[in-house]
Image: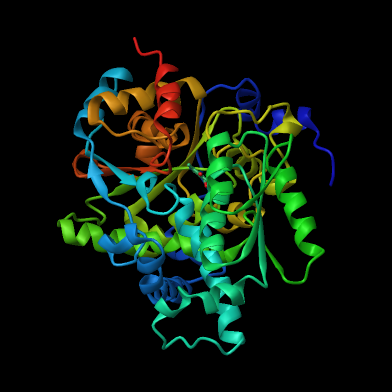
Length: 444
Ligand SMILES: *Cc1c(COP(=O)(O)O)cnc(C)c1O
């Protein structure tokens, strides 16, 4: 890997100095294209997403059996969309900015099984792998009722195989819990920032948790090495997996159905803005891909990152993608936002999605803590720090006259806008941990 000339980088991209100074920054990408022009660069299409959706439907009877909490949604792992009007008023006051349109919250924080957005991609990839093994062994046909997988026969079959993954916490939770339930032997390689309670929960599920003193990239590397030694071990590659990406993308089609049910209109005159917390990029990238397929040019996605881990902003803005890390420009990659403590973005997602993501911004840890408390006070909804990163997106959009002008948004359109904050985690945070988060808030 070539070394980065920081001085040249700062000259070519003055914003890099603000990143190094850990300022909260906003960048709207002038290279964004129409949806039709941008989609071909992804290398995946609507048929791939429909295929993923169909696979999840095949597994629904199994999930209902294995995880009874999914019975209310008939084995489909999906979250609610709720409006947060009191929070909207509180945000307007806090940032002295009127937010026109309506703020909604997508509660992936409360997805069953693992309580985060990782219940989409992570679980989907494990199911895909399990299905492939069972089909190849002639034990399963896609016509079967997958309920049969919930049996000693299949647990025994899967126990001959293992799964490994590197994670800051939430991906490990999804993959660990799902793999162990199917019967796989599973190892989760966890970075230093991973929470103790997540490690304990995984161990209670029979997952082998391997701990590292280093960050996410090292945990991933070690997991990959372990898997290479064993031909029966499948490594789930958070940085490059198109399977994970497709699992996330299903959210787009499902959201379209949810809005249709609620009678919410999304079109050119009723734009949808979506604010997605970004770590390595697979989750927000996959969801944004699904949203673009579902809503086309009517949806506008922004990625949110901690000031200490702005890897995607850095990679896309400089065009270096995964050839640069935040550490190489002197940023420590230390943040309280689980899932977002990633120093080097996915090269696949950055390149695939850069034409389709309107903008990027950063938020500091203290503000995430403040917003946890504000959301709790106004809406009685409790989220983990990462999930609050999306909360300031509507303020950035509203304040950015250049962006609004470049997109030719009229006041009438903005009045009809929906601002959807993607709440990516928090539903399973133990009460005492949540209390610690809340006590970090400094609201004045
Ligand atoms: C993983 C995660 C994200 C971001 O997903 P990436 O695929 O890493 O970009 C956001 N929020 C939470 C809570 C997460 O666990």
